[in-house]
Length: 103
Image (cartoon, rainbow, N blue to C red; front, side, top):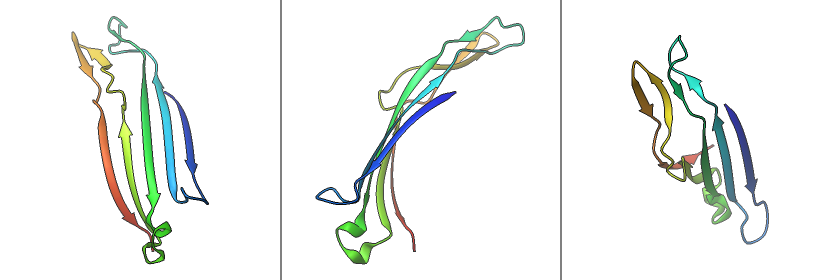
């Protein structure tokens, strides 16, 4: 598996505290049995993230962060592996929102 990630968080200006991230995941072809008779093809997935440091709005919220992470952003259908005559699909698009506080 190969990954490429990019992240940026604004430190000043109108967008201070706003962060963006993106990533590509490449997973190569793989064989699902010992005789190498069933092969799952390679695939590439796109991921993205955005977060905001709430302390930039109000100093009393320092340490609070709101974030949204998206995996398989393009909702690509892909096969993770094949064996015993069956192939199995990977996870569809998922979106996870979180609110965390560090003190």
